[in-house]
Image 1 (cartoon, rainbow, N blue to C red):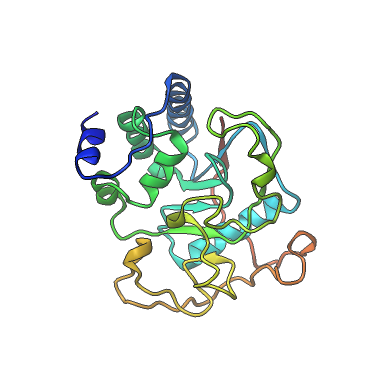
Image 2: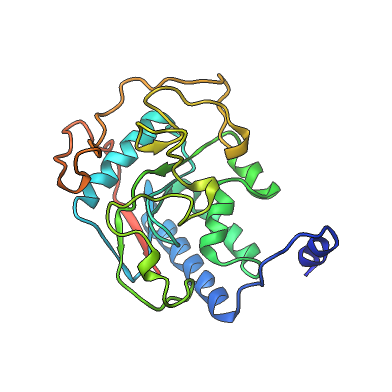
Length: 249
Protein backbone atom coordinates (compact mmCIF):
# COMPACT_ATOMS: atom_id res chain seq x y z
CA UNK A 1 0.00 0.00 0.00
CA UNK A 2 2.80 2.39 0.90
CA UNK A 3 4.53 1.65 -2.40
CA UNK A 4 1.35 2.33 -4.38
CA UNK A 5 0.78 5.58 -2.48
CA UNK A 6 4.35 6.77 -3.13
CA UNK A 7 4.06 5.83 -6.79
CA UNK A 8 0.80 7.76 -7.12
CA UNK A 9 2.35 10.82 -5.54
CA UNK A 10 5.25 10.57 -7.99
CA UNK A 11 2.90 10.12 -10.96
CA UNK A 12 4.02 6.53 -11.64
CA UNK A 13 1.67 3.63 -12.40
CA UNK A 14 1.98 0.50 -10.25
CA UNK A 15 0.23 -2.69 -11.43
CA UNK A 16 -2.57 -4.06 -9.30
CA UNK A 17 -1.22 -6.43 -6.60
CA UNK A 18 -1.60 -10.16 -7.26
CA UNK A 19 -4.82 -11.74 -6.08
CA UNK A 20 -5.13 -14.61 -3.60
CA UNK A 21 -4.66 -17.34 -6.23
CA UNK A 22 -1.38 -15.89 -7.45
CA UNK A 23 -0.11 -15.31 -3.92
CA UNK A 24 -0.93 -18.94 -3.12
CA UNK A 25 1.08 -20.00 -6.15
CA UNK A 26 3.99 -17.94 -4.85
CA UNK A 27 3.75 -19.71 -1.50
CA UNK A 28 3.65 -23.07 -3.29
CA UNK A 29 6.84 -22.15 -5.14
CA UNK A 30 8.46 -21.14 -1.86
CA UNK A 31 7.59 -24.50 -0.31
CA UNK A 32 8.97 -26.52 -3.22
CA UNK A 33 12.15 -24.45 -3.44
CA UNK A 34 12.86 -24.74 0.28
CA UNK A 35 12.10 -28.45 0.32
CA UNK A 36 14.37 -29.17 -2.65
CA UNK A 37 17.12 -27.01 -1.20
CA UNK A 38 17.01 -28.70 2.21
CA UNK A 39 16.64 -32.29 0.99
CA UNK A 40 18.65 -32.39 -2.26
CA UNK A 41 20.94 -29.34 -2.09
CA UNK A 42 21.26 -29.17 -5.92
CA UNK A 43 24.16 -27.39 -7.55
CA UNK A 44 21.85 -26.02 -10.27
CA UNK A 45 18.10 -25.52 -10.10
CA UNK A 46 15.67 -25.21 -13.01
CA UNK A 47 12.24 -23.61 -12.66
CA UNK A 48 9.50 -25.19 -14.78
CA UNK A 49 5.74 -24.76 -14.92
CA UNK A 50 3.53 -27.81 -15.33
CA UNK A 51 2.12 -26.66 -18.68
CA UNK A 52 5.53 -26.54 -20.35
CA UNK A 53 7.64 -29.30 -21.88
CA UNK A 54 11.23 -29.13 -23.04
CA UNK A 55 11.86 -28.73 -26.77
CA UNK A 56 13.74 -31.06 -29.07
CA UNK A 57 17.45 -30.89 -28.21
CA UNK A 58 16.49 -28.95 -25.08
CA UNK A 59 18.53 -31.06 -22.65
CA UNK A 60 21.63 -30.64 -24.81
CA UNK A 61 20.87 -26.94 -25.13
CA UNK A 62 20.59 -26.59 -21.33
CA UNK A 63 23.97 -28.25 -20.83
CA UNK A 64 25.47 -26.08 -23.55
CA UNK A 65 23.91 -22.95 -22.06
CA UNK A 66 25.11 -23.62 -18.51
CA UNK A 67 28.60 -24.22 -19.84
CA UNK A 68 28.55 -21.04 -21.95
CA UNK A 69 27.29 -18.98 -19.02
CA UNK A 70 29.85 -20.47 -16.64
CA UNK A 71 32.69 -19.80 -19.07
CA UNK A 72 31.48 -16.20 -19.25
CA UNK A 73 30.91 -15.69 -15.52
CA UNK A 74 31.11 -18.67 -13.17
CA UNK A 75 29.07 -16.84 -10.54
CA UNK A 76 26.14 -15.94 -12.79
CA UNK A 77 22.94 -15.02 -10.98
CA UNK A 78 20.43 -16.67 -13.32
CA UNK A 79 19.98 -17.86 -16.90
CA UNK A 80 16.76 -17.07 -18.75
CA UNK A 81 15.78 -19.56 -21.50
CA UNK A 82 11.97 -19.27 -21.59
CA UNK A 83 9.13 -17.08 -20.28
CA UNK A 84 6.95 -16.95 -17.19
CA UNK A 85 8.24 -18.78 -14.13
CA UNK A 86 9.78 -21.29 -16.49
CA UNK A 87 13.18 -21.88 -18.01
CA UNK A 88 15.06 -20.02 -15.28
CA UNK A 89 18.29 -21.63 -14.11
CA UNK A 90 19.79 -20.67 -10.74
CA UNK A 91 22.61 -21.87 -8.53
CA UNK A 92 21.39 -24.04 -5.67
CA UNK A 93 23.25 -21.91 -3.16
CA UNK A 94 20.96 -18.96 -4.00
CA UNK A 95 17.67 -20.78 -3.43
CA UNK A 96 17.29 -19.89 0.22
CA UNK A 97 17.75 -16.17 -0.41
CA UNK A 98 15.36 -16.28 -3.37
CA UNK A 99 12.67 -18.08 -1.38
CA UNK A 100 12.96 -15.47 1.38
CA UNK A 101 12.61 -12.69 -1.20
CA UNK A 102 9.46 -14.30 -2.61
CA UNK A 103 8.02 -14.62 0.87
CA UNK A 104 8.65 -10.97 1.74
CA UNK A 105 7.23 -9.58 -1.51
CA UNK A 106 4.47 -12.03 -2.46
CA UNK A 107 1.72 -9.44 -1.96
CA UNK A 108 3.37 -6.97 -4.34
CA UNK A 109 4.06 -8.84 -7.61
CA UNK A 110 3.49 -12.33 -9.09
CA UNK A 111 6.30 -14.86 -8.68
CA UNK A 112 7.66 -14.68 -12.25
CA UNK A 113 7.95 -10.89 -11.96
CA UNK A 114 9.62 -11.21 -8.57
CA UNK A 115 12.11 -13.70 -10.01
CA UNK A 116 13.26 -11.21 -12.64
CA UNK A 117 13.26 -8.36 -10.15
CA UNK A 118 15.44 -10.41 -7.82
CA UNK A 119 18.09 -11.77 -10.19
CA UNK A 120 18.32 -8.45 -12.08
CA UNK A 121 18.81 -6.53 -8.82
CA UNK A 122 15.95 -4.12 -9.43
CA UNK A 123 15.30 -3.31 -5.75
CA UNK A 124 17.73 -2.23 -3.07
CA UNK A 125 17.35 -5.56 -1.29
CA UNK A 126 17.91 -7.57 -4.46
CA UNK A 127 20.83 -5.42 -5.59
CA UNK A 128 22.59 -5.85 -2.25
CA UNK A 129 22.40 -9.64 -2.58
CA UNK A 130 23.35 -9.66 -6.26
CA UNK A 131 26.43 -7.47 -5.94
CA UNK A 132 28.39 -7.39 -9.21
CA UNK A 133 27.09 -10.73 -10.48
CA UNK A 134 25.33 -10.93 -13.84
CA UNK A 135 22.35 -12.72 -15.34
CA UNK A 136 22.31 -14.38 -18.76
CA UNK A 137 19.68 -14.22 -21.51
CA UNK A 138 19.58 -16.98 -24.14
CA UNK A 139 18.68 -16.09 -27.72
CA UNK A 140 16.01 -18.79 -27.99
CA UNK A 141 13.09 -20.25 -26.12
CA UNK A 142 13.81 -23.94 -25.37
CA UNK A 143 10.47 -24.84 -23.73
CA UNK A 144 7.09 -25.46 -25.36
CA UNK A 145 4.01 -23.92 -23.73
CA UNK A 146 1.25 -26.56 -23.87
CA UNK A 147 -1.51 -24.82 -21.93
CA UNK A 148 -4.12 -22.19 -22.76
CA UNK A 149 -5.33 -21.10 -19.32
CA UNK A 150 -2.78 -19.99 -16.73
CA UNK A 151 -2.79 -18.45 -13.28
CA UNK A 152 -0.15 -15.98 -14.43
CA UNK A 153 -1.06 -15.39 -18.09
CA UNK A 154 -4.39 -14.40 -19.61
CA UNK A 155 -6.25 -16.85 -21.85
CA UNK A 156 -5.86 -16.17 -25.55
CA UNK A 157 -2.21 -15.17 -25.40
CA UNK A 158 -0.76 -18.58 -26.30
CA UNK A 159 -0.66 -17.85 -30.03
CA UNK A 160 1.53 -14.81 -29.46
CA UNK A 161 4.07 -16.62 -27.28
CA UNK A 162 7.28 -18.02 -28.80
CA UNK A 163 7.40 -21.70 -29.70
CA UNK A 164 10.38 -24.02 -29.67
CA UNK A 165 13.62 -22.40 -30.77
CA UNK A 166 11.93 -19.10 -31.59
CA UNK A 167 13.59 -15.83 -30.50
CA UNK A 168 13.17 -14.87 -26.86
CA UNK A 169 13.20 -11.10 -26.95
CA UNK A 170 11.78 -7.98 -25.33
CA UNK A 171 8.32 -8.58 -26.81
CA UNK A 172 7.96 -11.68 -24.59
CA UNK A 173 9.95 -11.06 -21.41
CA UNK A 174 11.21 -7.97 -19.60
CA UNK A 175 13.90 -5.93 -21.34
CA UNK A 176 16.28 -6.30 -18.43
CA UNK A 177 16.39 -10.10 -18.80
CA UNK A 178 15.99 -10.54 -22.55
CA UNK A 179 18.53 -11.30 -25.27
CA UNK A 180 19.51 -8.05 -27.07
CA UNK A 181 19.97 -8.89 -30.73
CA UNK A 182 20.98 -5.32 -31.58
CA UNK A 183 23.86 -5.58 -29.11
CA UNK A 184 24.81 -9.20 -29.86
CA UNK A 185 23.94 -9.87 -33.53
CA UNK A 186 26.38 -12.78 -33.86
CA UNK A 187 26.02 -14.28 -30.39
CA UNK A 188 23.51 -16.59 -28.74
CA UNK A 189 23.73 -15.32 -25.16
CA UNK A 190 23.54 -11.86 -23.68
CA UNK A 191 25.68 -10.16 -22.40
CA UNK A 192 27.68 -10.61 -25.61
CA UNK A 193 30.65 -12.94 -25.27
CA UNK A 194 32.05 -13.73 -28.69
CA UNK A 195 33.54 -10.27 -28.98
CA UNK A 196 33.58 -8.47 -25.64
CA UNK A 197 31.24 -7.84 -22.74
CA UNK A 198 31.02 -4.18 -21.82
CA UNK A 199 30.00 -2.50 -18.61
CA UNK A 200 26.41 -1.40 -19.25
CA UNK A 201 24.56 0.11 -16.27
CA UNK A 202 21.31 0.39 -18.30
CA UNK A 203 21.05 -3.39 -18.38
CA UNK A 204 22.54 -3.79 -14.88
CA UNK A 205 25.56 -5.77 -16.08
CA UNK A 206 28.99 -4.45 -15.19
CA UNK A 207 32.39 -6.09 -14.85
CA UNK A 208 35.26 -4.54 -12.85
CA UNK A 209 37.60 -4.60 -15.88
CA UNK A 210 35.21 -2.72 -18.16
CA UNK A 211 35.46 -5.14 -21.07
CA UNK A 212 36.12 -8.81 -20.82
CA UNK A 213 36.84 -11.08 -23.81
CA UNK A 214 35.68 -14.65 -23.51
CA UNK A 215 38.43 -17.26 -23.73
CA UNK A 216 38.21 -21.04 -24.12
CA UNK A 217 34.53 -20.82 -25.06
CA UNK A 218 32.66 -23.94 -26.13
CA UNK A 219 31.64 -24.00 -29.76
CA UNK A 220 28.30 -22.26 -30.06
CA UNK A 221 25.12 -23.64 -31.62
CA UNK A 222 25.17 -22.85 -35.38
CA UNK A 223 21.74 -21.28 -35.09
CA UNK A 224 21.98 -19.44 -38.43
CA UNK A 225 21.45 -22.81 -40.16
CA UNK A 226 18.82 -24.64 -38.12
CA UNK A 227 19.01 -24.75 -34.31
CA UNK A 228 16.49 -27.59 -34.04
CA UNK A 229 18.55 -29.88 -36.27
CA UNK A 230 21.85 -28.92 -34.67
CA UNK A 231 24.30 -31.61 -33.69
CA UNK A 232 25.76 -30.15 -30.54
CA UNK A 233 29.48 -29.87 -30.08
CA UNK A 234 31.07 -32.53 -27.84
CA UNK A 235 32.68 -29.60 -26.05
CA UNK A 236 29.30 -28.13 -25.14
CA UNK A 237 29.02 -30.09 -21.90
CA UNK A 238 28.35 -28.68 -18.48
CA UNK A 239 30.95 -29.27 -15.74
CA UNK A 240 30.44 -32.39 -13.63
CA UNK A 241 28.00 -31.37 -10.90
CA UNK A 242 25.29 -32.96 -8.74
CA UNK A 243 21.82 -33.36 -10.23
CA UNK A 244 19.71 -30.60 -11.73
CA UNK A 245 16.39 -30.08 -9.94
CA UNK A 246 13.24 -28.47 -11.28
CA UNK A 247 10.21 -26.75 -9.81
CA UNK A 248 6.98 -28.09 -11.29
CA UNK A 249 4.63 -25.16 -10.72
